[in-house]
Amino acid sequence: MQHLQTHSLRHILSLAHPSAHHHVRQDHGFAKSARHRAYIALGSNLGDRVAMIEKALQLVQRDGSVRVLRTSGLWETKAMYVLDQDKFVNGACEVETSLSPIELLDKLQSVENEMGRVKVVDKGPRNIDLDILLYDQEVFLNERLQVPHKLMLERDFVLRPLCELIPDALLPPEASLPSGTLREQLARLPPLEDPVSTLTPLMRPGSTSIPPPITAGHSTRSTRVMSIINITPDSFSDGGKNYNAGPEALRRTIKSQIASGATIFDIGGQSTRPGAAVVSESEELSRILPVIKLIRSTPEANDVSISVDTYQSSIARAAIAAGADIINDVSAGLLDPRMLETVADLGCTVCLMHMRGTPSTMNEMTSYPDGVVQGVGEELLARVRAAEAAGVKRWRIILDPGIGFAKTLDQNLELLRRLGELREFPGLEGMPWLLGTSRKAFIGRVTGVQEARERTWGTAATVAASIQGGADIIRVHDVKEMAQVTTMSDAIWRV
Image 1 (cartoon, rainbow, N blue to C red):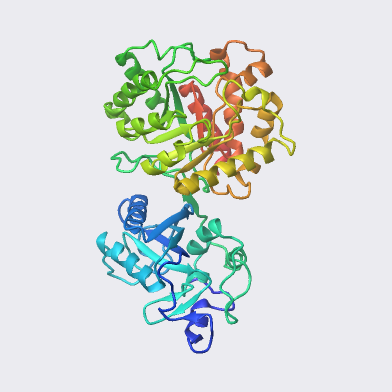
Image 2 (tube, rainbow, N blue to C red):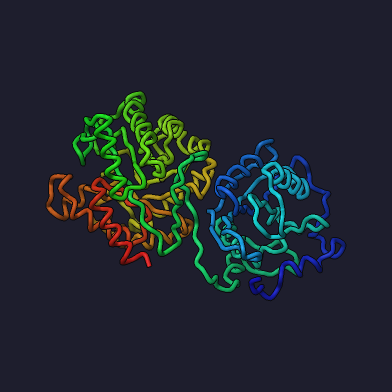
């Protein structure tokens, strides 16, 4: 067991007696109509761990007595007490509830039982683990429950996700409890022997494919190659190549790109270049749905992820139903007010890209008074908060700084130079990043190459810079060439 700080919360709570401290409550005095704020620890190390946690949150909210407000990321960690077991995935969520502490405990335990949890060994393997960490500003004690949780201050895997939600929160104002914020409590723990990372799943709920999740915190992770499949006649970069291709030609392209290293396909049926014509919903669907079905019917693509490049919620819903995994929204939910709630309802992973205005107006919106890194960081954080408020889980969010969207040439270059700073922007730490620089106009301006499809060498330099800065996914047209750049860049910087 890890070394505890000077005041063990377990020891403190064992000394606290209800009659001695006015903050310590038994299970009475909680108004049924009142809404209470609680924080719940989430854990699993059996089966599809992410799916287990997501199912548990659905069941917890089923009768309306508990509402999940926000989630932390999901962190993969080694088992702490019983070491001979698989790694855990741990997280935390903030909830609003009308239940008293004991009623909330009953609710969580009923969900564990419904999901078939069987406790074989104390602190041993389990498919789902739900624990109350905090409840309002109360200290609660009886034979079944202690709040704050008796072991939370010795557990990195509890404090770390909790600090994503409420880093500056204090423990209840009980004289015997340690002082300092939760962030300070985490800093007091001894360093971990092995680095930990968040997990970001790349498959939709219920998918039978098993692409490995992104682990943005691991320095040795492999960069994912996302292949661009534009099904449009007016793409700036490929002149409608895929739009004019038949199914068998497209299948050959898909197989070839998988063989070259693509693990994600990003399908677009609506061009976002300035001045592009806006197509109808039916037209966009007619372009992308056959491609999704074609990829899903290709055996070689069993373990690839399908992303759909759209800013329309109706397209997103139809695409996920057809077998897509990820929604890649260039507007981060700004162009369709229903997008974020739709993504939350679908439970899928979403990429939130930074953009201002629309593709037609964005080039006039490049003023960043505090600098482009600060501006992009603040505006993406606002979109993350909006996504969380709509019910999107933090572990289902990927970020994109929007290279070429509402950015000047110099601002694009600065974002590439300073991507590492953006990854550490307060409130965005631990989240994965997608970079899409392929064949873009700023590369042509720097290199003097006017034809977009001939900007391979310039794109290669931006891909290498993206990986050096910490990108988790690179979105490219030239899969074979950029996969080689990615492999070499990973060998240099992913150590």
